[in-house]
Image 1 (cartoon, rainbow, N blue to C red):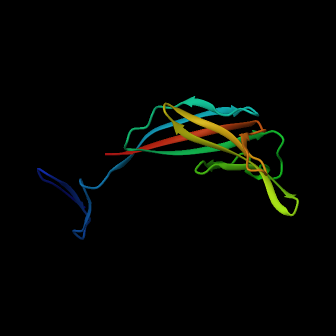
Image 2: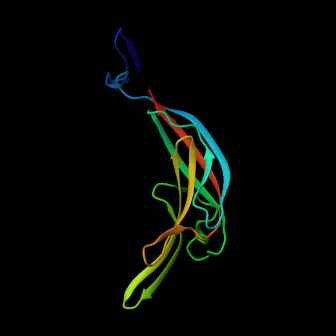
Image 3: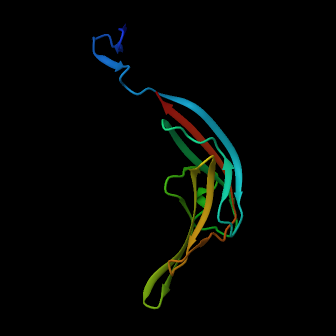
Length: 151
């Protein structure tokens, strides 16, 4: 491996002389880690936890571990204790039903997203009539936020 440094560029070449990296490439590096616990009470629209606002070059990977969830057993039980990615939300309750001759469902999910200087934890429910409400379940979570950035 060789490193060539000129006034305008840095190059790293392998033993065969192939350029594997130049300073024109983006260099990704680990920036920070934040972990904590949060409870989303039943019928609460959201809970905010302080989190430094990301810069334009930051990449945030958010995961949650569901430690407990009241009232739900079927769909959530296999998920308890697992570290889950938060992209798109996590379904914690699904109640299929027939409304007359039409199928319908009541659904609840939890989500977390960066919001200003916070991580915003939400529990959202949709009724079989497609009405959005705050979730009826209380959920205790451990969250992990890993921030990567690039030059």
